[in-house]
Figure 1 (cartoon, helix red, strand yellow):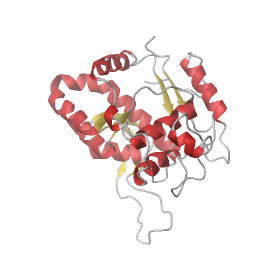
Figure 2: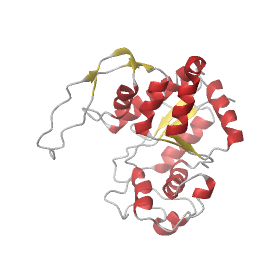
Figure 3: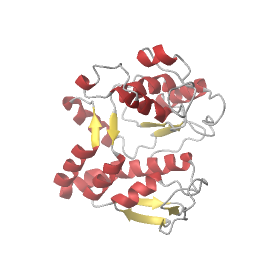
Figure 4: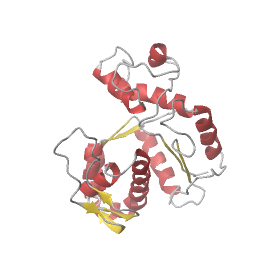
Length: 260
């Protein structure tokens, strides 16, 4: 079946482990006493690359990186899934892809300020002077990037929702854009996307993604409230894995929102 299940993992997940491999040998089932400032999911890649750990030495031969392989081991532990391939998108270059498409149409639900919150560390902080207003908007690359990443009066969970919305919009609109802008789009994809998907499998995966568009049984699982609380002292990863298994088997989630 060509259903699509999207699983969202907040960057601030903590207290997780790793499947068998060098990171498990180092941390076991508790990534909490790490060698960087905070031990979050998005810290794994940084730690392995910054400290240049002697691990995953064959990663480059397989089209990957040590930080990516360490993150894959964490994500497999968190989700209970085997992660066969990765796709890494350069978020700065993501704007280039949107511009190559001629923009992306998004139905903006709430006003989004182009900026960050005042955390008290910058005496020169000023509130945003530019906003993305509610309603259907065609966002260029810069605006789409701000829409996905804005931190002004916004939580990580708000950003996750906007990122999923933007992802859905790109997937839905990309095929139509290819008819008139294929050369620009393919160049942008080459520049911003890194993956270990074999050349022979890329077309099959893309075809499955396109076939899944618009299905009313597509679903999402976000490891965020109300399912789990990433900011809790201990995160119940068993609950998260159970929800993921249910979604993969077509069981609706209480707070599940069909992908558009």
